[in-house]
Length: 442
Image (cartoon, rainbow, N blue to C red):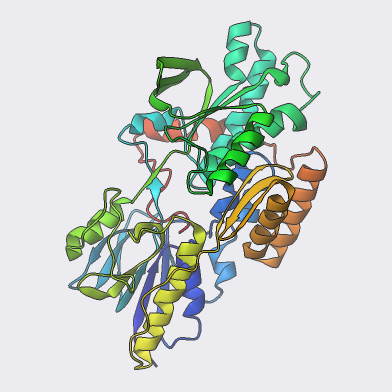
């Protein structure tokens, strides 16, 4: 029996692909994750807008990796001398999990750029709890607009502000526009959903800045066609319960809006700082660990850092985490087999994709740039292919047919608890972290 112990921190894309690549390697593999599910984060916005259920984007880890040693908890520290990770378990106890090789795929946390107080009024989208809260806030806003007699307050309920013009912000803006102007058309008698205002705000000079400029322009054109106001070169300076204050080239401006969402940035979780402190590894401005060409921590070849947590200069997308997790696992397998070190990690860029609305998406795949229907069909195929589990593929495809060909949204049930749970937990003194170190992907 081989006693080499491999600990994988996180069961997102990086952790999941590492675990799968180690399935036939003679080693004891332990996966530590903050939730019982693997999150397919690229489709999380569809949970937030009522297209998909949470189960379709978050299959249970134990179902994906049957028979594996899976520990529920959050890794809070690493002892590099004793070679064990410190796990904060849900029962309040602290546990130590020993390792010989460590793969850290803990993902990223939300960044409010030093204004964490914005989170109360503008939640971000990083996990299932966030998606359910967003869904409740969106549909609750329409219901409150229907009840409201005052014209100005009704206008506030029908105004949505999204901060961040990357894929998440663009996709949310497009789907809220579809909800207001198509899906829910004719379902409200007093509130005119045709007057719904959706504002997409970012300090950058174009939407989807990581994409080819022509695709960015195509995406912006489609957003405007849907009725979305795109406000670029605009920096958010304050967020409260009733609106957003912004700084533009013309000066300060305020938009009165009851519903705000944050999609403007990510940062390394606290675990990255703990690893850096323990190993002496350098970090970048976002707190990510600067790794060696083989994705190991400098001076610690037994510790691999993959995905969003590694400062490699690569984009924070699922494919980087998938390939990094697989590479780390194969490197460990080579070592155990007594083979010489392989080549440095090299990322194969499969491109970026983002949906704007039904039948419209942009796909930036090297020399191939697709937009409109062709981009949407490409997006559809790629995401369906990478969804985990046959059942999830089938039910997701059915929900897409209902939502895209018809006007239905299969998941419109919302609760008051989903809207207020975050604040309630804060009031009773419990720590609420919307993106704990490795609840989510990459």
